[in-house]
Each structure stands twice: as structure tokens, then as C-alpha cells.
Image (cartoon, rainbow, N blue to C red; front, side, top):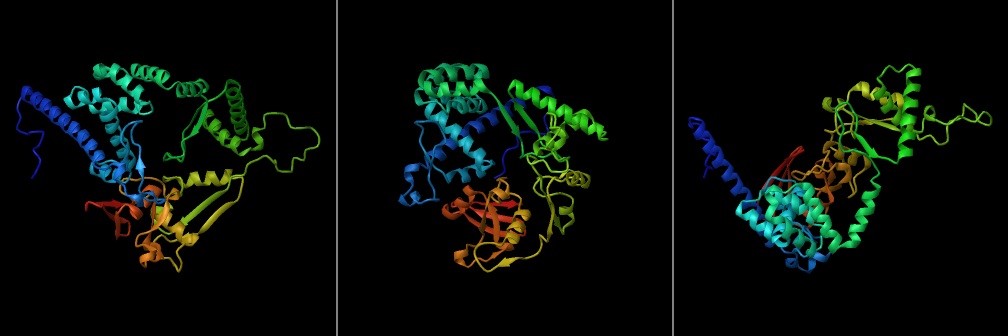
Length: 418
């Protein structure tokens, strides 16, 4: 039966439109609350104590703590079915289900307000993410103090209340977090996101002297690049200098070189070489980019990489992604493995985007059942979804070159295009 449309095209006048908007809002709120309740029922229907003894075998299904101490554990494989049913990835589904269980079992006052529709689900979930690390007494303290005003709670007030509860009910963890926060130094390179220009974001918080030294080194390197004829802007030259610093290039030696005992022709023993590996693919689409950057880059960018490479530049043999490769044993050859990883850049489970190089290679038709080790029977699966297929009664069928159909233990099917 088709769902009743929330928007009616025959509405006429501002009053009618506003009334329809209010109705739609009420319907959406009720649906969201109902889904949150169903999430708890799903977790209740899959308790960890329902696992049989076979679940203790290494690699098979185990219990999963998705909420804070005192909340019931769930059978971990139930997450995948739930996540796909509500249109989320497995990780996002685990988080959603955990928030629902956290609120239902450890924040009962807040739960009552969510069910009554006086606190939006998204607000309640924000509170749950903060209380999950508290002991049961701490969560109850937060629930008692914040549930009555959760509909207008500021996030600063939430954090203060949670930390006060932690200091009272878990002083050891509170002191550990205080020491970590007091330092605050970090340096992060986001290698998961690459821009269309082949760049990555770097951010950090450094010690004063380290920051000043780094700033001085980048400025000196940028100036030396300009002296060598580089016409890029100062910001670009500083960014280039950071890469040179990482490789230990001589131009970033900020201390004077010894006047004697140093042969300028000899390479710097502390310099870190950078190897460049280029894959040449037969397909035109693959020629437009370089694998392992997770994006397409211009040929001028590749030329720049080659120009600054301080180690060997390797051109791998042409790898035809359309060629059928097969080996006689269970373990794929390096060439076959590389072909599969390049063909499928991520895990092939619906909604999973873990890079294939961090995944296992799985036989679609199991090796024990006569499945060959070949191009058409190998796919990358992250460890969780590999275990889900092996021990969780999920079945996988390859229905196209890059099309896969998964069937859950409940008979529901999901299609993934890679």
C-alpha cells in the first residue's frame, strides 16, 4: 500500500500551507520516536545471552557492549541487519542502536521525555554520547539533573554536568582525562580525505618552542625555494617546504653546516627518501588518476611528484583490470591481489567504505566449496563483514562485474555497486 503523501499539491493559501507544515512536522516526529523505540526492541530481541556455546569460537559472533555499564549486551551480528533497514552504515547503525539502548536503560527520565515527544531524538542522542563513558551512578546523576531541561540544554552545560558526575563517581578516569586535556598537543594528517588537487589537510597544536622552530624552518624553506626560482605564493612554498622537511631535504637544514669534515657530494645520511610508485592501467578512466590517493589527480600533479621524489620512481607493469586471472591454490598471487584491490576500492558490503587495502580478500564461493581463487571470485571485505559472511549466515552472490547481492538471515536482500 502506498504511503500517504505529506505534501498536498492542492493546498491554497498561507494558512493551509502552514497547517500542512505543522502536520508534516508532527508526522515526522512521531515516526522518528517510533523508530527509536523499534531500535530498542531490536536490541532486546537479540540479547548476548542468546548466543550458544559455538559463539565462543574465535572469529564467530560475540557479545557487544553498545551502551554504558549496566546496559544489556547484544549479539554483535544483529547490527548489520538493523543498520541496512534504517538506511545507515554498519558503524552509524551501531551508534544509533547504542544511543537508543543507553537512553532506555541508563537515562529513563530522558527516555520518557523522548517518548512523549518533548525532547527530540537528536538532542537525546547527543546527551547519550556523553554519558556512555560514565558509570551507572554517574549516568543516573546526569539523567536526574538534565532530563527536565533537555529540550533547551546548552552543550556547555551538558559537558559541565557530565564532567562533574565523572569527578564524583569515577575520579580516577576524571583525573586521567584532566591530564590529557591539560597537555592538548597533537599533530594530525587527515590521510582519508584527498582534494581534487591531490592535497591533504594538516592540523595540530604544538609546544611553543616546537611551533616557533617549525615556523622558522618553513619560512626558511619557502625563501630558499623562491631563491631557486619557484614562483608560487608564500603559502604554497611553505606547504612545499613542509614536505621537504618531512623527507629531510638538505635545503631545510637550519643550522650551519660544518666547515670541515663534510663532503658536499655525499648524500645526507638522515635524509628520508620518498619512493613513488605509479600503476599504469589499461582503462581510460583509470589513466585519469593515480591509485592510492582515493581521488583523480592531474598529470601535472604526477609530474610534480616525480620531480620531487628522492627515492626510486617505479612504474608497475600494466595491469588490465578486465583480465581474468586465476591461481591454483588458496592464496592469491600478488598480481591477482593487486587487481582485486584496484577493481574494488572498498569493502563490498552495502554502505561500507573501508579501503580495500585494509580489508581481507574473501572467496565469494568458498574455497572449501570449490570456489576458485580468481578475479571473479575474490572480493575485499573488512574484518567485521568478513566474519558476518563466514559466521553470521549472510550470503553473497556476484550478480555483475561490480554488482553484489547480499541476503540476510531474515531473507532480506541488499545490492551493492562498487
